[in-house]
Amino acid sequence: MKRRALGIIAFVLLAVFILLPLLQVVQLSFTSTLPREDVPKGTLTWLNYINVFRTERLVDSLINSTIYVTLNVCLTLAVALPAAYGFARYRFTGDRAAFFALLAFRVTPPVVLSLPVFLLFAQVDLINTPVGVALVHCVFNVPIAIWILESFIVSVPREFDETAFLDGHSTPSFLLRHLVPAIAPGIGAAAFFCFMFSWVEVVFARTLTITDGKPITTAISSLFGFRTDIGLVMAMTTLSLIPGLVMIWFVRHHISRGFMIRV
Amino acid sequence: MAAGADRKLTGVQVHDNKAWFFVLPAAALLCFVGLIPLVINGWHSFFDIFTLDQKYWVGGEWYVEILGEGRFYESLGRSLLFSTCVIAVQFPLGLLIALSLPREGWVRSLGLILLAVPLVVPWNMIPSIWLALIDPETGYLGRAMAWSGVPFDYKFTAIHTWILLVLMDTWHWVGLVAILACSGLSGIAPSYYQAAAIDQASRWQVFRHIELPKLTAVMLMALLLRFMDSFMIYVEAFGINAGGPSDATTFLSLDLGEEIKAFNYGPAAARSVVHFVISLMIVWVFWRAMTARRDAEVTP
Image 1: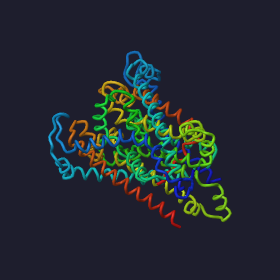
Image 2: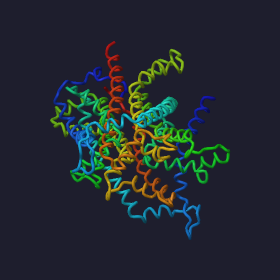
Image 3: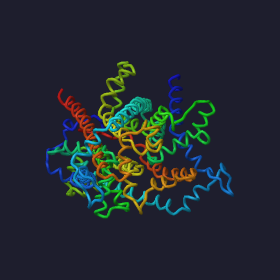
Image 4: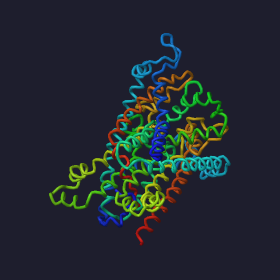
């Protein structure tokens, strides 16, 4: 009984620790934080949200972020699925070196790569477009997706592949029509982690969008100035949390499974 | 699904170099966005660059300059100390959370959702959120501290800036540690726990002999991710106090970020190379540790 009570208290403390900062955000987002003629400072109001949707660049940034994150998740899954299948089912010359390279790419700090990536992308016209950001976010997302998918593929017995091949499926058709449905939770978990790391990333997204295609993170930073409307900032932050929360809800049963790292 | 399963033991793998065809698209993509930029960086680090058409060979001059100044080692020391603090707080806490969560049911789902929420907050917003929280006039925590008379001055007192940074980073990332630990634990069959219950094993014995072995692989990975991400922290740390007070929170990446912002291409490239080499050495150590673990498992 005593242990149970202790557990409940600990859980409540954890919930408060995690939710308190977010509660602050939501509360400020509904508060008028600048002195205005018609709305006094400190009143409860929808004004901040109305202002977000009245400001074209803020709405654009929400759209831009959504585009590059969606592109990135699709691209990452498309290249990671076959790679994960290869790692799960075969041993090949250089597979350990490839694993080491994946580790190295995952942990290379974006600040280190931002300048040369900018120079390279300037040469091939990938600046100021969501495509460029989606491509560069693959540096850290492809390794993550490969690890997650691999751990789900390994739990599918090999006979499953062989039966499909005996039925005359080609490799691409097997991957798409048989393997993907069989590891759907894994695809969901991988998509969640890719979404998350791409959505929250700042350095690449900011460096690669100078005049156009600006992401949410840049739009929010640009709101800070001499007289920062902190309510507007918090309204924008609250909006930026919604897609992530929706994603978490969909994959809630799968995010804690399969993060198997094999050497 | 077992976190520690080993590829030599799975018995479903065939040696076939044609498997490279499966890996090729991913490898090509990573070459383009990862390897080529790194090579460009390495090349530029030997030049003094005014514009990209106007550059002068300076050899290893930038490296001598960076590695010769005390500032670099001070930043390196601060980054190491920050990573150490972060890991010392987040690993015990994350493990404790993962071990205490029920193994199924809605409490577990709710717990995992809670843990994942801070992970989806855009990084540059995290400092703003915490600064709003500790604001003495409008923030919940700030007002509580002002009311109870606890002095807190993150702007000018170094230790307070550090506390704020570690607290903020823990809020942001402890969920990842806990989620990864949960994923390691989810590979343990219920029969193990039943056997332990029959043997009347203590909680510590269950942890030491059943849970810990299953956790090692995934926790090593969590350690690598958390170590590197905190070691190279940039956006969040800059947002709190821009490296202050008087450089007390100037970490490695902040120096590099400043150089990039100032368009010092040559020195910035050299500094990037130095940082990359440091990350590579750390990854190497972790890789060796993981390999050693695997070999120990394979040979009985």
